Structures are given as structure tokens and as C-alpha cells.
Image (cartoon, rainbow, N blue to C red; front, side, top):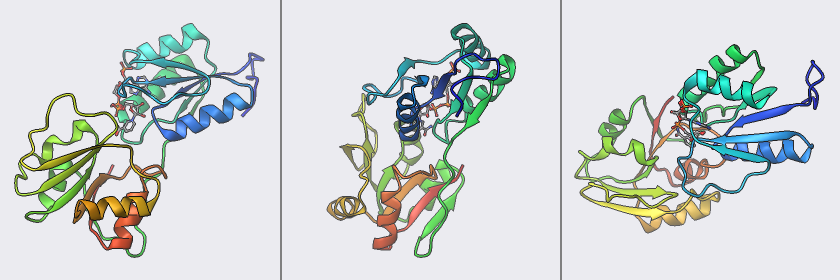
Length: 230
Ligand code: NAP
């Protein structure tokens, strides 16, 4: 990546972040001496420290983002947001068009089914809930805002892993909350699956390495994964 723009202005980069890949990218670009700001939506209470500058909170739509880019003198935007964060990605496209700035899209590719994977592919959370058999014990690997679709499954036991503990108790008939990040090591995931007698995993096809250990573990243990597509 050039350190000077075509107009001769030094590069000033805005990374739309909130992912491990965005944090890695910020570290890499700061190490090259570039002026980097990472933008976070503010969903996580205590975000991990990031290299470079950080700003937190929404911009007020595409126009708000365009105005921010202009006011702060950014020369480039990198979209390294989560692949399911669609609004901000669409806003980035519009804002960069308004501000006439280059946009690099670095969102993750989806995971591809590998030999040995037992995936039940669905296109909505409701379909995911309906795909679970009676009395399943389910690792629900989804963010807080995606859980309600599973409430009607009062026959199932849900194991819910979250970075921040829930602010209000969940209304599931049977559930366990684990306050933890996904393990990076499949053996650690396997120990967790066994400890909770997991029979099914539900997740979205987020891609990337950070949350892939559970997919490898499910493959090793022959467990079905209900995979919500993009
Ligand atoms: P979204 O639905 O695409 O965006 C909703 C609104 O949140 C946007 O219109 C924007 O508000 C604000 N926003 C989103 N990302 C932002 C960012 N990086 N910096 C500043 N404002 C941002 O996004 P989302 O799915 O809620 O995800 C929010 C953040 O969490 C993203 O940074 C994403 O990378 C991260 N994340 C999301 C997921 C996921 O499953 N969706 C998973 C892991 C991490 P304004 O319109 O006011 O600008």
C-alpha cells in the first residue's frame, strides 16, 4: 500500500473494524508507519486494545460517514468489518463514492464445506431453529441479537457462549451461559463439547480463522452443524 496518495498527500487510512482481521491489519499498517484509525461500532464493552487511533460509534449513515471522511482528511477506507455487518459495508461503498475516496474491501470469504463436514445449510435463524431435532443439546454460537429465534425450542438445551455476560437473563427453558471467547484450538473446543454433551452446533457462515475451531471439532466428532448462510 503506498504511503502517499496520487495527489502527494500522506495516506490517512480509516479501517472499519470490529474483527480480529481488522486488528491485525491495523498492527501491520501502523508498523509500516502509516496513519491509521480504526472505527468500532461500540457493541463490545471492553474492546481489545488496537494499534493506531480508535474512534467508537456510528457515523449517522453513509452521508455521516462521508462527512466524517472529509472533515478528518482521510485518503483511503478499508472495510474489514464482519461479513454479516452489511449496513456499514453498504454505507462504506456509498460514502466513498460521495467523498471520491478509494475503498479496499477486506471482508472474509465464507467457509467452504470440507470432506467429513455434516452441515445442515439454512438461510435464516428461524430455519436453523426448525432444523434442530427434539431434545438436542446445542452450542448456539451466535451473538446476543440472534438468539430469540430459538426461544420456542423449549425441548432443547442451549449452551450460549458470549464475550460479555448478558445484561438481562435469557428466557430459554433450558440453557447454560459461558462467558468466553471461542477457543482457537479444536482440542479445547472438543473438551467443551464433551463437558456439555453437545449434539449440534448452530452458527453463521462467518468465514475466517477466529471461529473456525468449532467447525473442525464438529468434523472430528461427527457432529452436525446448522450453518446459517449469508
Ligand atoms: P451493521 O448492521 O452493518 O451496522 C449497523 C450500524 O452500526 C451502521 O449503520 C453504523 O451506524 C454502525 N456501525 C457498524 N459498524 C461500525 C463500525 N465499524 N464503525 C462505526 N459504526 C459502525 O453492523 P453490525 O452487524 O451491527 O456490526 C457492528 C460491528 O460489529 C462491526 O464493526 C462489525 O465488524 C462487528 N462485528 C459484527 C458481527 C456480526 O455478526 N454482525 C460479528 C462480529 C463483529 P451509522 O449508520 O450510524 O454509521
